[in-house]
Length: 227
Length: 227
Image (tube, rainbow over all chains, first blue to last red; front, side, top):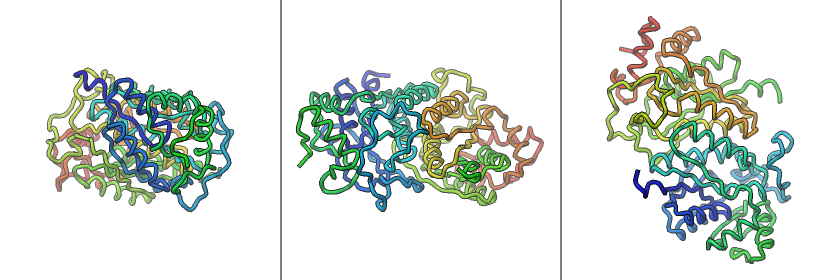
């Protein structure tokens, strides 16, 4: 294995704040980043365009992978459903799953599928690290964003023995901390997209818009993507 | 949750001996089976046709999911490569991965991707069980067929908290035992396909053909799919 192989990483890039920050962090840590962008029947293609812009700005290679989940009834993949406008309860990651209702925006198995593709890609290009910008503080309460889920992934990857590890550097950070870090790393936040809806401008009322606004407010910065 | 929900299972069906036997076993155990069949750029569609025949014969619902792995250089997905004709070493599942060369037929991340789709499907239809016919005795030495990999999956599914479990009932059985069990269960082996190549008839010389022939020979039965 030569030195250049050792430093390859696969980065899961959604085009949002967190994954874009994770990408810039991985680059800062010296990795040659290969981004994976997924088209999974999201209700809009806006976030895919954002992801592509961010990858290009970061001068990374990227691949767009189409996946079909013909059984998903998530409001994130079904245009006929409403996106909830009440912010979900925060810091819910330590709550047993049974005790709360999953948000309608939850896409079953989504991160598990994303990571498994990243594993396949990593094994194929001899990358030893997968980066995912999952966050369990200012988040919608998805079970596949919680620390114990990623601890289990680390063990699974070890059991597989392919020498690939997963890093989740933003898991315990607030949006404020992430934005402060990303600002230092010069993440092009103006290209990022967080809104669950696919309008020309962010709706400002969905979970994701609210977390973003709160993050920029608390970081004392203006959101460069805002009107 | 009503009784019918409790008994749903998602079965990963490749059209081979093992997964077909796992399907019939799941049915015998009382599950309403929903099969997932993958088209992952295999070098031939023969095994997909076989899987569909088996699912229909078993009177199961099934879905065919297309996945693209544009980075895979496996000989199983690349027609320009030769399928090896020397049987791989058996009982290699306890060997540390580093100490042996992966077979060229290994598709990076394949079972991990399959299981993650099965998880997504299971969560969506409220199935609590995933069946996979993986086998670590008469097998090609793939790391994603080994018992510790499935133990890690069990833990990951638990960490996710969605109440979905994975069963790998044939993991420790020989092909002989699997064929004897399947014969009792009336698995339509004449519809199954094992050959890695996509000819009109099985090649008889690839790993998979050899394991199949050995299994039928040791079980003292004629392979109904043989000439």
